[in-house]
Length: 148
Image (cartoon, rainbow, N blue to C red; front, side, top):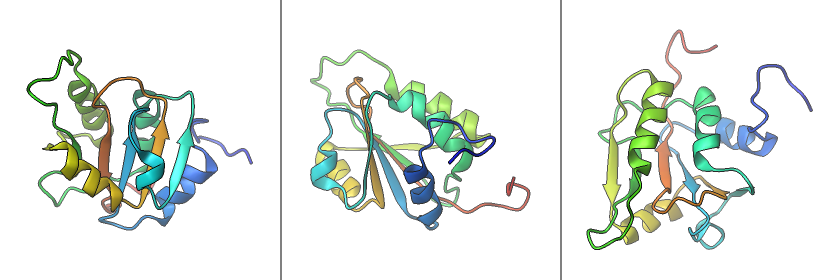
């Protein structure tokens, strides 16, 4: 089915999940190293697509919760890691742009992140190769004037 103004990266399955989610529900975007299949109640596979490609298209439709301290969580990068990238900064730019304001990203240790991800409404498994690129986003409400 083809609709106007829907980014082709947004599959019918992902759009359905976004519409089924209620305020306070969370969705995980997982990198290729994340145990998505073993943690997910609802798994959506996006082979060949990175999180940085998918996130702007997703956030165009998805209201981020604004009543909690951290509506977004990422995995804390261990101090002894050799990781040199800036995935948190990249996501911060995408989130702030889509939300129109600063979005607070909370950091969780690995096991706490996995525990939180296992309770998420859905997990989107991507081909993202950046390490520590997993992100949990909490759905907010659509405010007056945002209906489209």
